[in-house]
Image 1 (cartoon, rainbow, N blue to C red):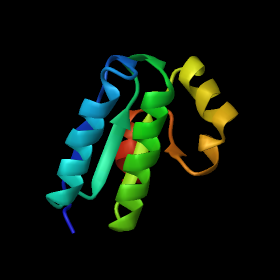
Image 2: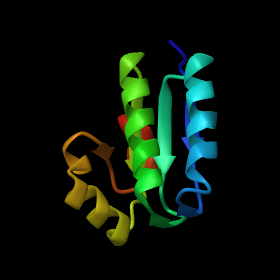
Image 3: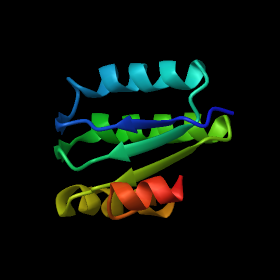
Image 4: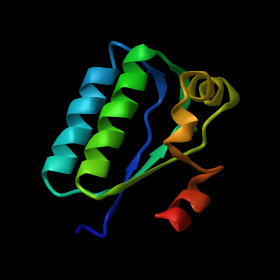
Length: 104
């Protein structure tokens, strides 16, 4: 298992334009052996349904290979989206990057 932590820090909007590209990049990393991800949401201003799709697909793919993904820096708006959709029940969400690195 890879001991490298892959830092993912999307910025701006994670929507139908950016979502598919990020999904493809992350799935390629997983296929190449990546197992640990720190998904830093500090620079995200919006997450639409396409962004939520990326989160679900990547989280499932990481789990399938016995990896780990931790989300940090989630602003109140995106946290609200995660809560309303029930994502907080299965996502590992911590306050900041330092907490995320400790968790991984």
